[in-house]
Image (cartoon, rainbow, N blue to C red; front, side, top):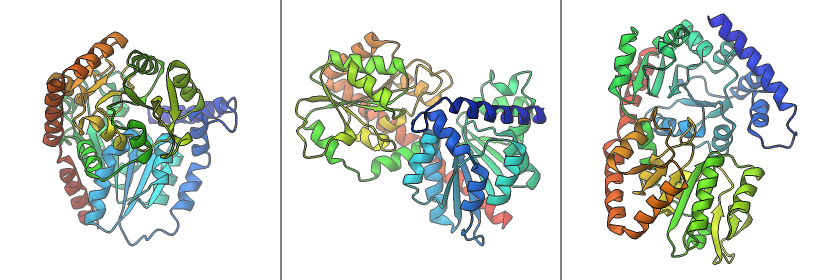
Length: 424
């Protein structure tokens, strides 16, 4: 089965390379950026690891995207505060790689994760020589996990959700079952995940909670201000539409802006490309402006919409909002709903939340609101605008919810540090 998977990964690389030839060289299209990142990816890792102090232990953390990096970030901070070590972070997503490369913080090396072939996995691990590996959420890269197990390198999976209809329970699930059984420890978000793993003979799991709560709490407590956004907002309340993911998100938030011309909107697309930004500008009836095209001294008094056309600051910008809509909920890729919730902001999102613990719980508590169309979004927004007492109640519950769910990071880091001490 692993050999078939390996062939499939090689074929996927050929397909990606083929598709990329039809995209212009100067394009910002995600497929083009992905292929650029994968080109000679192993060689870049080998070269990039040169000069790193190999007398220190090395911790490798992998996150598929910038959103999942939010789970890794507090873990990295805590490890670095307690241990003099090398931190190597890999991404599969161009958005995550590009954002963290610009602001690496405590990270020593940032790379694209080379495609998961047996050859790439072997060469990557030989170059990085990690003392342990930490994967986020649902990163089951079978060749990497197989090589880690062969080499006796401890590995951890963070914030896992294991559904009884997931790949582990399918006819083709043996590869997934073998991979997850190979982790030294699986930290899940709920008891159901632990029970589901036990049912297939995997007993290396424990409920831990989500380090993402620690990350948003850290972000919210970090002093941060933006003069352009403050000038745009003035004394008005802001509706922030974050991580706008697809046409359904875009149609809803632009129509909401048109229905409420007296409210100022900040719209943050998930992918920053000219086509998406132009669509927003075309659909908004009143004046809109791009963040990077204005300055703090510009007159923004007649602008209704600001489009944030750069990546990496959304979690901080939410502090300026009074209401939020989080994109991706009409796909399987709903983005972080606790980034706005930590500021006590009422949050709305699309209906595809069945596989998501946090938005489901937020809806149950009345902090979050599932909306299926513009009419439901409009009704929700109107009610909150006219009922300040309700909004204050939601704000208190949201802040309490986030506070009650922090604390997962220390438990994870304790396990990682204990493993490193035993290994070294």
